[in-house]
Image (cartoon, rainbow, N blue to C red):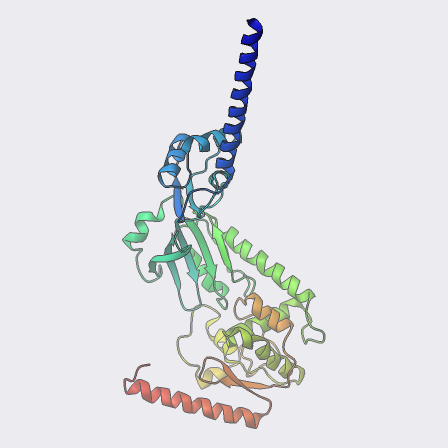
Amino acid sequence: MWRSIASNALTLFVVVMVAAAGLLAWGREQFTGPGPLEQSICFRVERGASLSAVSRALEEQGAVSDARIFRIGADYSGRADALKFGSYLVVPGSSMTQILESLTAGGQSTCGREVNFRISVATSEVVLRELDPATNRYVEVVKFDPAAEAAPADYVDVAEADDIRWRVTLAEGVTSWQVVDALKRAEFLTGEIAEVPPEGTLAPDSYEVARGADRAALLAEMAARQSAALAELWAARAEGLPYDTPEEALIMASIVEKETGIAEERRRVASVFVNRLEQGMRLQTDPTVIYGVTRGEGVLGRGLRQSELRRETPWNTYVIDGLPPTPIANPGRLSIEAALNPEETDLLYFVADGTGGHAFARTLAEHNENVARWRAIEAERGEAEAGGVQD
């Protein structure tokens, strides 16, 4: 009898163990396998939220199949207490383990709202955007110029939220004075700026920051990136260039930056200036004259006068030989590359061609023909504007 009972007990034990192993395997598959989510969502973890509340919300929004399995998996992996406040993009088919990794990794939120403070040559603007989970694209909510208008209510209402991502974007060709002037108006930053950084030493780029970040520290990061880029590109420069130092190459890059916004033209524009330097010709470029007038403090906002073209300043390349003493803006990486690896051409002149690009020439006669065509285009446009004709 006891032998029969023992045999039955052993059988029951084996059955239970097999069932437990099967349940464990099923739970592991549920935790690591593809999840049920069919459309991306932006999932928010509230500050101080419990694992129980988060797991229930994930199940309610269709991101996990079973809140209990998510909790058990979090406990088993030792991350039950590691949830980080913020908003997180959960894509279709995300497994529970992938979702848990995202919600406990920390750092900036991966979806939700973003404020991008964009500093460009003509203006600076604050842009509030929100990620559309379905398309994984940001949709603009509000935009304003802090130098010209008060922050709109739509921005003020959300600017204090903890899960907003903050970004400062510096466009190519902005002067150091313009950068400092704009950063002083960035209310989400803190700290004083002791002095304007040397012209050309700030890298045009996009910088992710935290609310309350120090302005001086951000400028230091901009300078570090520009220094690193210049050192890297100087090491890979073409042979025989008319620059003795990386700083001279940076001056040339800033001129190229201000002369053309077309990426495909930069190396050709650089070749013109290199050829002129090598032949002992003056650079004769308007952006350097403008810098001599404004010293980089704002935009001239009008055409140059003949008196300004004749006025001698350290930057007026119509009257000085060689390069000006400093850059005239902060050039981007592509312009630095162009200055250090220009096209090999015999071009000496260029002028606007009416399409946003330039017409290049080898001789003064060719250049004069291009100039005449450009003047005719200018005249036609002037008549059209005077007659109220619109594109």
